[in-house]
Length: 291
Image 1 (cartoon, one colour):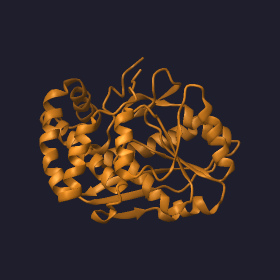
Image 2: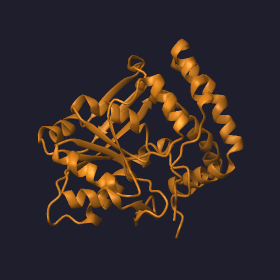
Image 3: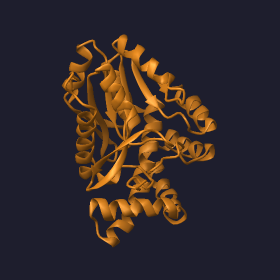
Image 4: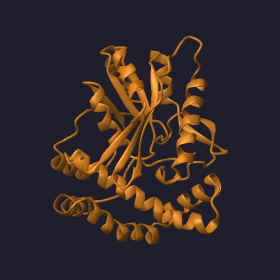
């Protein structure tokens, strides 16, 4: 099956250089340096580039030449997202603007005082979307795969002053399920991505961009089990320093709601967003690999 390794590439020196540049000179000089960093990955990451090329060529339908150049565009876009995320987490929100599409939907979820689960994806800037959610509730829990290198996480916490929301780490002993249940009982919001899984996690195959792909069962089973209201949220880069935030109308889970219905709902919504912004979907592995 398709498998993500649970780690992000990069090192402490790389983060430090970009943080120094944008804190002292602004975001655009950092973007300029990024042109050369993206070139490095373009030329020296053949395994990852192969998957990106196939995504653009076979799933999005671009020609061979366009798909080849889109490899570089994808690396550059991801670099921009990392810079933007770090700047906003460092308290430099003033350099960015945003527009909300569906803020009333989010307010309605919070106003019900029943808690809820917000599903996103590795599309656009998920962590910026998480910070946007802080305007609509006192307690936001982020469900994460906590396998990034500890050195980078520690350094980022030093620079940004730490995360401004609670983290629930997905663990092999499934203790995170109890934490999720307790958070929902406290009428809190839980946000997570649902387009990756680790190792031998349980999955279900659904058609995505014209081909069967595996999606994790876990979070959808939790929605079904706890009958939690749910919605879909995305933070998409619209211009150099402008983001659009999207939140769909919330869905209620009833006795008639099946696991397949919830998963199909999510996959179709994600598919529409990926088609609108194909450069901003960042799953750099063989997502459609067969078992």
